[in-house]
Image 1: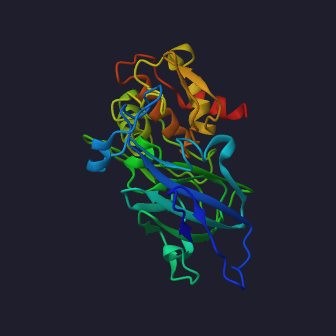
Image 2 (image 1 turned 120 degrees about the vertical axis):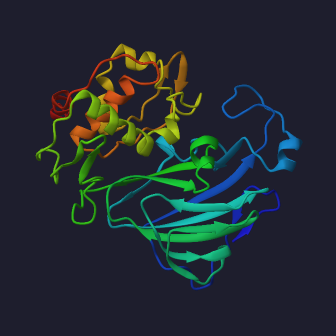
Image 3 (image 1 turned 180 degrees about the vertical axis):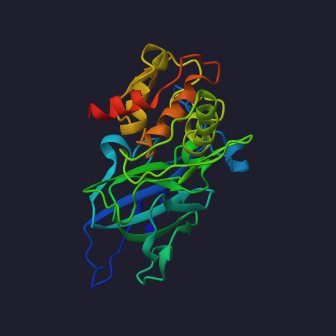
Length: 316
């Protein structure tokens, strides 16, 4: 592959015999923007040469803009299909650590060459002005995030795309279970959770235990986008601190955690049009993480019970 002279596009010259057939081929092109305003600031933004010389872009994006490979433009596939991504990096400065979270690349054609040079690769480096071809088979349904794994570029600067895989669950490969136990500090020890399916036995935690478990789960699952103090990122990820959206209907958050959210919303008079993927947690963990959010960052919105989580789940 070749990066065009305009530094924004790929030209691929396929070998005479062609590449092996796959089910889907997609184009992903990474680039940087150095702007006078900070990330998410509205209005026309001029080019900032000083930032470019420091190599500190305000935006690192796929296909030209934040969200260009999400929502209606998300890549799609079905369980069992093979995907080929033609990936370019226009730079002009940064090396891309290209990765699909939850997948590995079965085959990588490094530097856009015609010979497969690597197999079973998690992340591949793509230099500025360079390219690569990656292929992988999707075995489990879900929402996969396509990122530059210099991870703050993904969650704070825009280098984030979405691959939505449809099909039946494959529990023999992946169940979604994240923990076999909950650690309860200060003498609480470890409380066993036997959960294979959501309706299995689950522990009953008191308020203090929920807050501690929820604090850990929030750091693992939420803080990268909504930020450690729940302040969010304006225009990209809505705040949880002082959120009028949560205040209007705290229990609506249960459905969002269980099933995700892919429609535009308005929080504190700011529009948000991103994708919130479902978080695959037990009902106990959902109750804990939401109890933590509802009662942290200055919020005082009450406790979420496991019974309420089960009620919301039963409505779907």
